[in-house]
Image 1: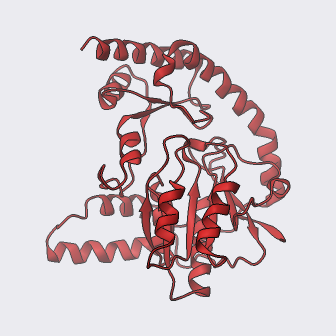
Image 2: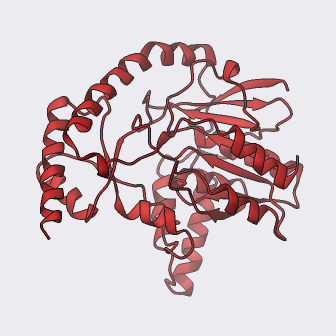
Image 3: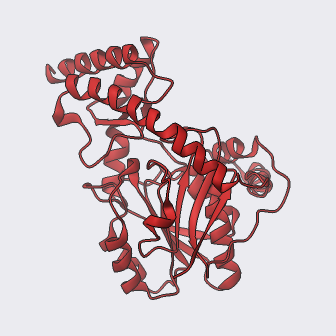
Length: 337
């Protein structure tokens, strides 16, 4: 299989372009399968490309989509254009075995995107290959393992069509979209029509239309910056690892994106951290987070209990130590009842 490298101002535009290309190739088949722990940008990429989607649960051992549940969906009455396989929390395992099973269930027409946006960016994706996927997508955007402020790139099969993003970019559209989609619950007919019109406008303008970075230059930046970033993460992770009880550390995560814990009374712990002038984050709550525990019980449980401790360039050893002390005190308080 021949492959090519493509870049974009952000990785979600690559996902949009792949989904739009598949819609153009198979206009009667616009439905996709997505894991329940996808971020807002993945859902927005599908929506802005004119696709609909079904959500499947994730697996506890690696936070990627439940392959058995996905195969059951693929064997049903609905035809799917594609599937997005997301490496939850940046889990670095190869997805080739899972994707091969999914392909065997769905047939060759299914387009599979291997979304590695939370993994460390690859310096040599051509050498690593597609691993049974049609596209492997990485990000160097805000909040990723290597944050260069922008940039996404993908290794794609030569036979995969990508359509360009059209329209005028509105940098405020993404926040407006997410807010509108989170609060779109019976607002009344007149208001609902207005909200739907705004959503349509924002979907047409939330992605940047500029050219992506030059791949050799982006590759050089990754090669130059990534070793220091990983070394800093290792130092902060050692603080967390040596201080925090192992039973609360998220098993199956590589902890290169964030250092992940599952804790009791997670929201109260976040309050304590912020009250101390520090910061951490909850597991991202997408606008699809209305999914209840009966629909996607594993994703729901992980979402409700996970806290992400920062280990990036904006967090110091002193801050990591202070956050660890707050976490230990919180866990002791929870244990005492």
